[in-house]
Length: 425
Ligand code: KE4
Image 1 (cartoon, rainbow, N blue to C red):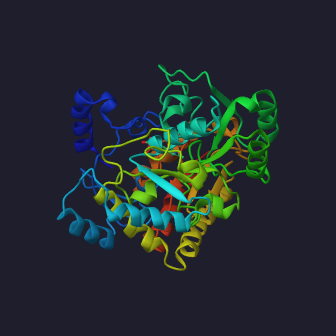
Image 2: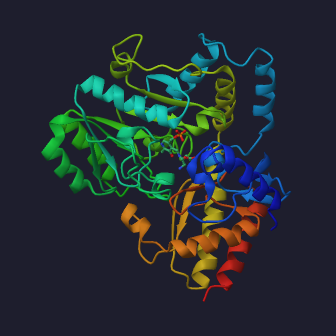
Image 3: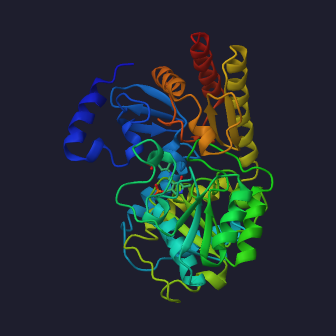
């Protein structure tokens, strides 16, 4: 595929933005090469400025679960924009989206909107510290909760490929890092520091070291340990919320966290984050309580409109069965062609989020994810990109299927992967 126009755009972008991007992982540092500059997206496909067309499994890193530019979302936004773009005052739209989220997510009785997943996680941490009056937090290596200081320690996603996972400039002396799926390690950490621990924050299905599933008993173990020491359990469902089930991972795994972070899908592609939980905690958030958190564009009417319409369309019966069916068809096909060519690999999938690792043993945490063959992933990534299949440009990311992906998309994807597999020695 030719990408001259993208190359020109990238050079100009690098003159005025660090790395030419608005978010590091988009710069392709993890895989090398020129990132396609996207001109438009519709359904399961995106087009770059050179006119190349791709089947999209990034979906804006999760929000595009309906497919891009869903006509009903576009219509709702076109109507809303006629009324103005932002008021900085209460609107009934916020109440509607908040009510929909409270109805959908088992543990949420009240919710506060912010503008990103980072804001959601940093605010939830502050609330946990405010509620418990304790300083420490526990997170997991390879989990990414946005770029707030306390959480940018051994983080995953872009932080794991764009330099030291523990970013320069971060003071995180109150952050304890445990190994994902290692409940004994958590018990040891809580035994040593539990009385100082405000919260344990976890991606209930990890998506930022590639897709890594919670082992049986891991999430239950976190729930027990936090209850035992009076710490709050925070589920970061920015990625899994409305993705792995309508009620998120907490519905799928039947665990009730104290606080939940949301983002991505609840904004339908516009900037929205949220945090929520039981009334006893959320009423401690300003202006009701002493935990301050604010945002000029929080609850923005356009973002609320896109979120309301998106969740309305996800609430249609059969949606998650359809996502399961399309995603299973895809990963079973990939499994078949890689196995056929005896290429060591592991496919991790929960619902419509999945990853392929080139590894000869199960990938259950950041260490095993990092041991997978990065060079092979890079070759795989670029072969697929040139074949019109758009994956996340890092093996420390998840891929996403949308309701817009068709059997033809799946067939074409498996075909291209089959061609790649044939070329492997
Ligand atoms: P944002 O601040 O990027 O909206 O959300 C941060 C965040 C929080 N929690 C989880 C579980 C997340 O996955 C994210 C962001 N996800 C990455 C993709 N792995 C965003 C992509 C990017 O950084 O550009």
